[in-house]
Image (cartoon, rainbow, N blue to C red; front, side):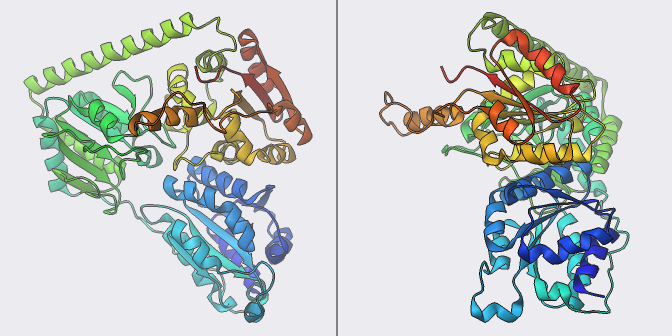
Length: 553
């Protein structure tokens, strides 16, 4: 058999159902093999960044290991921004690229480069297949490393001649691996003791809570301890229901802001990690003095990485949280039960006050023209199907998303990690392919959408029932906000305009959509937004809605 057959057999043996890719000449061995593997779909994209982003979100939404295929050095270069996002998200991806015939390597053939070195900084492991004899072992190891905690992408370069070499070494897998580790009993007791001693605990929930099916256990722990639950500023999942009374929203992006959020808490329990992703430097710790820190993670890697821990527990998040809840309940006294109940009551009152304030703000700005992001999102949320999934790259409108939508389960929401824009519009493809029976709505800013706008073509090519909502304020609003912060922090002159942050001439997303085979409409009237979304959801194919919203005041 040939190397390409071993490669494809290996994918099949590992349960791969689709490959996200942008084809090129050095990928011909893979492309020519697809006809013999009808159970593996090839998802054609028009840019390598789209292939990698879609694969990353597919991995997150399906729980499977995703495969993406790009084209030699320029194609891998095109995908590196998305690969950074996949690394930060912890997405198990096997990223491959065709490579020129190794017999020409000393001749510097067209498009050849050191692909292994290019990919290495953004992957857990980077390698090149040097012979067909090692193909089976190489792919087996790639799947293992991608799924070892913490999960993440790996890269394999596939030279054309290696793919065509003969070998007798057939596809193999790592077998049945039971990798979820049980938490240490003494660690569980130590964490329960910290919670029982805390007067006002807080929990910071990372994406691993959702990925490992631990959201219900987190709810039980929050309610039993009366703990406030925060998310990170950037998150891919919603690990805790955003309308639960104990939900306190997302933390900020500066140590000082995080510190203010945590200042009244004497214990902070971090779930997953590492924490935190900051933007601006503050000369303080995000953890207030006197506040104890504990952490649970599924690998030692993020443990005590940035903070001294009163207790750290390595183990599967669900098993660990279940064990901590049992130990906490076993040690609970009547006095503790009453104090936890009082904390839950106070959190519920504060949650209701925030909701009432958001409702009042929405009412006060209801007649603003162009409509505010909050108004647009409330109209979309009002017609969101009960089983719908939201893919969110709204960026500065993120707080409005959290206020408008009800995300009861971790699979109802997919955000972004890493901070690189353009992931959402491509990621929505992966989410929809992973969940073909659920309605999927993508919300993106206009600036973000343009990074991977060719995603619309793939949606049309596959006839995906996918709704793209583009919030068009015709500016890089987040950059304007950050310019304000920069000027304030560095005592820069503050009465200057915002340089190169306006999107003029105005982009016509309905026309862009039509050019790629997607029906598109523009909506300026806030009273027409919900009806436009309903029509799009019922259209039976991809549909784009450009919603004109107000910019930065």
